[in-house]
Image (cartoon, rainbow, N blue to C red; front, side, top):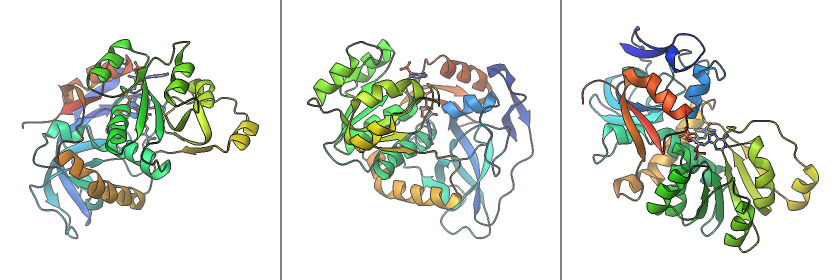
Length: 329
Ligand SMILES: NC(=O)c1ccc[n+]([C@@H]2O[C@H](COP(=O)([O-])OP(=O)(O)OC[C@H]3O[C@@H](n4cnc5c(N)ncnc54)[C@H](OP(=O)(O)O)[C@@H]3O)[C@@H](O)[C@H]2O)c1
């Protein structure tokens, strides 16, 4: 089968299409013919040699999500048949024509969604759902702050927030992204680099600050985040685009009774991922079927253009997901 391989650590040019052996299918696994996959920030780090894949995933094929058709079923598979449309998250290996995946990690693709739309859902929406509802335990009416609002995960979180009755305040450094998100009804969108940013968030939250911060930036954002998290607020750290190391005043953490949680999807056990996938399928997938939620695709390219797609993401140009299609549709 064809796959995109990281030939050596480096820039987008190190991604090469190669012919490699097909994965084999264990008893509880499906062999899926992938129709589309999508990029994630982690793919860029993996390509540079800074984020190795977990031991059970291919080390040199990026790709944390897929949508495709079941081509074969392992002997113990009971939930799916050949031909079923499925999507899901992976530890790696999504930039390929085929993948073997545990049946419990698959989500049925609703009729109404194209392969491209389906591939744009799993990683962003599962991550955002887990962070907002399982880690932060957000309640209706609470205020949520998130920077990088135009990222794949950011847009998923804004949509889930609206669907769950949360009051989201988004921020993005890019004016064009803020304008586009605003036109599409995403609620208040602010410039985190403006001197008025802290004032604006405090004004929107009645002077109290927000209940929850979904942090994809890390160290560089802590000086702002620490001024904007209200007493008893919760912060879920899921990304470190602005660095990992910073100084935290533990006295402030203690006095303000903050909860700070770190969370990552990729290295979780299969059992944990299956539990999350089942809950997501049950609670969230109906919202894609009735159109309340919709994946947001920035652009679609062919698998052979993976390098170009990585360069777009590295330049922070995408608003929402970059999808790679595979084979004929
Ligand atoms: N923990 C997990 O399991 C998990 C899973 C998936 C993703 N994530 C994390 O979620 C974040 C978003 O991922 P994604 O794939 O959705 O990203 P994406 O679509 O590539 O969007 C990232 C956006 O973040 C903004 N940005 C980049 N560097 C920044 C910085 N230093 N400070 C502030 N903003 C910055 C840029 O938008 P502007 O131009 O608007 O600033 C960029 O377009 C990443 O941190 C990723 O690692 C975590």
